[in-house]
Image (tube, rainbow, N blue to C red; front, side):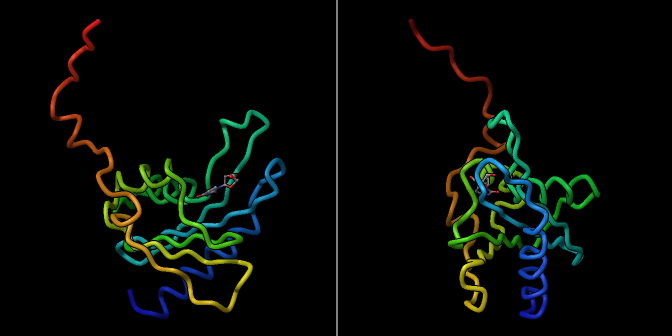
Length: 143
Ligand code: THU
């Protein structure tokens, strides 16, 4: 992606963070996915009183892209304090659609610092995929 497009993507993730619903953790996260044809879909974390129901920003953005018919992506940006990387569930979720996605991590505590860049393959090597399901059913454990 061209540098100006990456800046636009990063800005969208920062803006989406303002919509975070995070009353339990107080930790707001924004995300934005750039599709193969250059559209942007954004997400924020959406928490729930039943904590297991919390959704991460990355999966909200990714699901919005899929729901709009966009399954091919160029890059995903996340914006969060400290500039951390997507959690394990999100890595698995993203790898379903883009095993080697470019990920930009924006530290909202350092808004002028350039985002860290990762490839999903680097963050999540040897993930589980549909290819593994085609290996056939697992053998039942021996008692
Ligand atoms: N969170 C995300 O949205 N993305 C991540 O990659 C890590 C964590 C959210 C989930 C929860 O609402 C809050 O941050 C604290 O974990």
